[in-house]
Length: 488
Image (cartoon, rainbow, N blue to C red):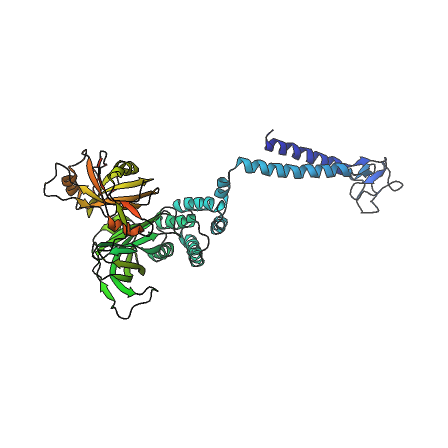
């Protein structure tokens, strides 16, 4: 039986029992004043019309002023009726709760209640409150000063969570982005939100050979941001300083600190938000003598609302962040052998079987193009370390040389290791000249790299020294009807 039906039966039964119990049981046939229940025996007769009740003064001649019999209320019936009414309320509440979802209840809740539920950051209730607030922002029922006050409270909560390392739910960030999308959030608050969301960390190899190419990396994350994309960061390295240090990390007084302007692109982009992390890097040829260095990089980070806005040459960010990141780099002599190579040709088939290449695609944008793919090593029979080279198509110009990808891969014996690799191209037309155009297979060569091995030299004792070539039959190309930089 439905709970609502049970509640209705309990309600009716409770009311009947309460009324019956209150009416009581008649004890005699005495005349009784209906107003004060005074026994009128000897005071009033049925033929009297002008007598007043000696207790309360009621005119007993009025119609209905006198009733017959003293009565005693039925206490048991009244108690049972009260119990039935309480049961009706409890069962009815359960029935309503089951028939109406929590999200529907939140749709009826006042905004102040939804704000308190959101800022309490309960993992179950906060997402529901955030969803309803997003809807109210969208239909403009939550706008103006109340919305700005809510955003300010969220920003204060975000700052406290960041400074204390406390709890943060991305749904709070989603509400801020909804306010921005509805046009109710100014640049100042948006920049504050991005700055409090983002985290930047240094990266790059911990050791490299003298004179080799080195990638100075910056990692981007938004641990205190929204659940989806937050912003685009344009990353510009202003200056890189190599500070000679001793084994304890202290600067050496006998070696000068020399700034070195970075090579490579002056501006790079990385996505912030969505709970993901990214990294970009600048390529530099190390011109320093062997030794330990603390590499200090001054980064200028521009904050942009979207990629289309950031990619324009005249793009002006809505805000700026300047950070200095540092990490330790060891430059070793070019002749130092850090690993022992195993040139066993019998391993070739086993190593080839452990390598998987997928998701090959040509991507283009306003400033250039790239061939990107995913390279996976699964349970390699021995440690492997490869640089990746793109081999020009047979139909390409004969003067074209193999092109090196901007990253390689290292995997210990028995390990599973994957990475994204890519080859930078000048434009989509350049990609067609090098690769032969859509529909043609792509050839790549994996060449054993001692430089790659430096990343994990402390763990790898021996590595296979062969080279492998792969033919990628399926390569995705951009839709020619879509302009570079636009969404398909």
